[in-house]
Length: 440
Ligand SMILES: [Zn+2]
Image (cartoon, rainbow, N blue to C red):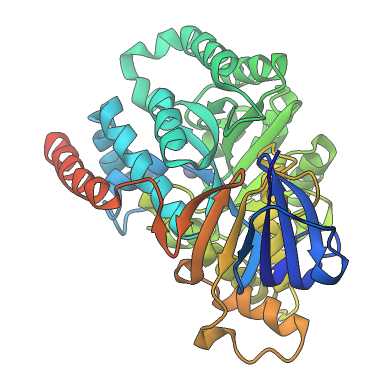
């Protein structure tokens, strides 16, 4: 088995100590990291050597996305969440074909890779198309096929067969050794009855799969259901219905209280924090500091590209601490290390991947290179400043090279195996058609 060696000026490992290595060596064997450390301590090596310079770090992990919404990017700007969904998003999505979703995912996966995102946790319909597109482009995918009453309309009565279909899809595609793992994606407790969410949760537990659900994104979305249940909070209701009992990823969780957070902690629920989407749709500020202080794994996420409007997770790395600090009126509230940890290893754990998002021996070799020869990365007079530059000033345009499972997918800012121009053209014509057909 050949080992490839990569040399970089610096490496941010995102391990438990948040080690910053200088003159770093990263060895990759069969898609996994076989050694990481400083050059002076590196083992003897006689395979290929790649002198990267710059800084290497784990690929970013987008813990909650609906990436084929690249086809709907920019639509309905200025509407509050419910109107935005029902008046614009769902009508256009109702016209979408599997071929549209395939192109939407291809373009979005390419966009993510170019900005250094190497994993994405997706809730969407057209799961076969998303798997096909992700494998083609090479990004790591956690596919949680969506269950949405608003979109299934008349066929909603057929939900049992949808659950069975997702279980079959899991059996066919879930493979932690490859690029694809599979969970279940019931949209939310405001879109679906609690009994149904419970049924999906039970099906997910049967195969130890991730349950990925929107929770308390906007202030009043649960009001009606909560009133019907004697004022119990949505999270309490989810817990009562045993929906939080397996491996659960709760997207957003903006309007949760301290009791809800304690419930998350007790049940080991992970959270996908979407600060840019939450600000764009005026949803609110998720109490992330409190969640993390109780040991909850919180990842960062773009949400769908229609509510962001891009898939560059570097914006979340910047906005999560900005939002935490301005809310707490505390300049120390969330550190650059915190933000980078959430964007990598913590997000990876929240979406059920324990061996990505970190540079350590045995982890999958999903890593990126940043070019440090850039105005925003000087001066560096100590380690903290370099880490601060990366978190506060880093962006997709600094990412020059990207590897997933040891395979190089971006080289010198260009995709190695994907025709980006063609995908842009396809999205332009398909997105226009969806707008026209839906009359929105
Ligand atoms: Zn979402």
